[in-house]
Length: 113
Length: 118
Image (cartoon, rainbow over all chains, first blue to last red; front, side, top):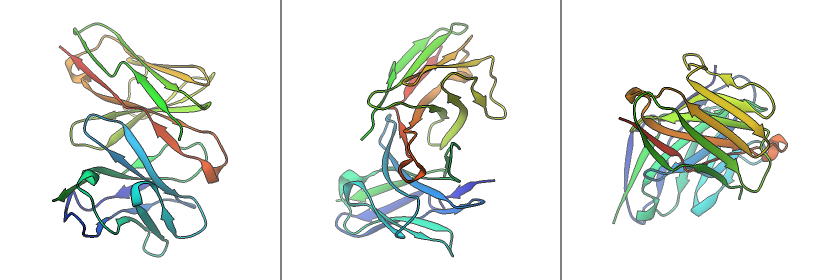
C-alpha cells in the first residue's frame, strides 16, 4: 500500500529565511512524487513533481524538492521564504499509471514578516 | 498550465435534496478524473476514480448510490450527492489527469465546491 508522511503539522519561518517542509513516502515500485499548495477555500495548485531523472526538481514560485531514494524522502525547499508562501502544503505519491494520488495530511507553513 | 473548473463553488441545500457538482477540464482532455472530499484542517480523502465512458471506481466506505458519478465526456465529470444530509457537508474537490505519458502525467485540481446541508 502507498502512504505519505508529513511529520510536521506546522512550520514557522521568518521571511527571507530558507524553508523546508518534510515528506517521506512508502510505495511499491517506482514512486511518482508531487507537491501541491492549497490556499484557504481553494483547490490544490500544482508546484512540482518527480517522475524520473535528476533528483533535484525545480518548480513554481521558486520551490524545489529533492528526491532521496535511500531515505524515501521528498522534502520541499525554498531558499528565501515570502509571507505570501504561507499556505497548506501537501505531498502526494502514486506508483505510476492510472492510479490515484495518496496524500499526506498536509503541513501548514507560516512565514512571518 | 492545465485548468480545471468546478461549478458551483459553493452550495447550500436542505436536507433530503440532491446536489450536482460539475468538474470540467478546460484546455485538455481528461480520460480520468478523481473526486476527493476534504474535511476542515484535514487531508484529501479520495472518494472515487471516474473514467470516461465507464462506471466509476469507488473507494472502500464510499456509498456509490449516494455519491453518483458520471463521466460522460472527456472534459466533464459530475458528482451528484443524493438525499443530502448534514454529515455530507464538506469541501469537494475534483482533479483531472492530463493523460500524457508518465513523464508528463500530472493531476490538476479544481478550485473545490463547498457543500453545506442544512
